[in-house]
Image 1 (tube, one colour):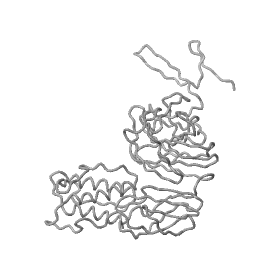
Image 2: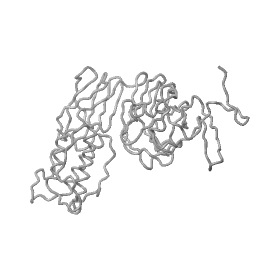
Image 3: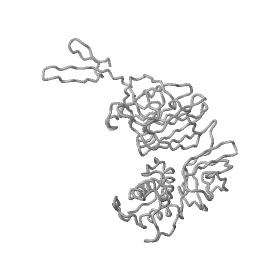
Image 4: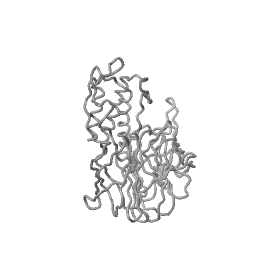
Length: 408
C-alpha cells in the first residue's frame, strides 16, 4: 500500500512521527515533530526515573542479545560512540572461564561515558567459534553488561554497534550469550542501569564467565554445599557442576582428596582445618583446564575467647567482638555482600569500650548474610538494644551460638 501522508499548513508529515505539543498560555500552541526510526533499539540510561516507563515491548530483539521488553532509550543518538578509558588508568584484571568474581560498584570506580554510571572492566582471551556466556547478578542494583570485541576502544548506546544486555539473565540480572566471531582479547564491562543525572547502581555483584568449545575448559562449579563450616575442618563439601577429567582439587590453599559422587557432575571431599575466613576453590583437569572460584566457603569459629561466659564474672572484651566480626565478614564475602561498615573498625583491647552499637551491627550484618546464604534467623534478646543498655552475657552468647549453628 502506498505510504500515506498528512498535510498541515502545506507541510507533508509521516504518520509515524511522534508529536510533542507544548501549550504556552491559552492561545499559543507549538508543535514539534520528532522522527522515530521504526527499528530503533536504544538504551534508556539517562532520562527515565523508573524502569517501568522504559519498556518497549514492541521493539524487535537485537541479534538475540538484547531483550526487547527491557530495551532502554539512550541519551546519545543511535550509533553515536563514546571513547572509553578501560580501568581508568589501572590494569584491567582478567577473568577465567568457569570463574565467578565477587565485585562491588562504588564511588571512585570508572564512569561510563554513555550515562555516568559506574563500571568495572575485566578481560578474557577467546577463540573464534567459542560459545561464551557472561552472567552478572546483584541484589543491590540493576546490572548491565557490555562486551567489547578485540581492538574496540569505544562503546555505543546502540546494541547493533556494541554488544550489551540488561535483563537477559532473568529478573533484573544481565546475561550475554554468543558465539565469538574473532580470536583475541575481549573486555567485559560490569555496569549498572544509570539515570544520567546522579550515578546509581552501587553495591555488590557477581560476575561469571562460562564457555564451551575451542579453547575452553570443561570445568564448572554451579553449587557449593554447604557454604560454611567449622574452622576445625572434617566436614563433607559437595560441588555440583562439570568436572570432566578432574585431576586436582585445592580448597583454601590445601590439596584435598576427592571422589565423584554422581558421574562427572558432582564431587565430594572433606574440609581441612583452616583459619577463620572466606576461602576459594581451585580445580585442574588432565587436559590442562583450570578453574578458580573465590569466596566459595566460609570457615567459622566454634570456640571463642572465654568460651563460657559467666554473669558477674566475665568482662565484655574487645576480643569477643573481634572474633564475631571475623566470622560475619567471612559469611558476607561468601554471600557476595559488601564488607560490613563497623563502628570503631579497630577495637583496642583494654581501651575500646564495648557499646550497644557493636552488638546491633553484628546482629544486622550476620542476619543479612545468613538470609542470603539460606540459613535461618530468629529474634534476639532485647531487640531494641540501644545507647544506655548494659551489654549482657546473653547478647554475645546468642551471636556465638548462631555462628556455631551455621558452622554445623
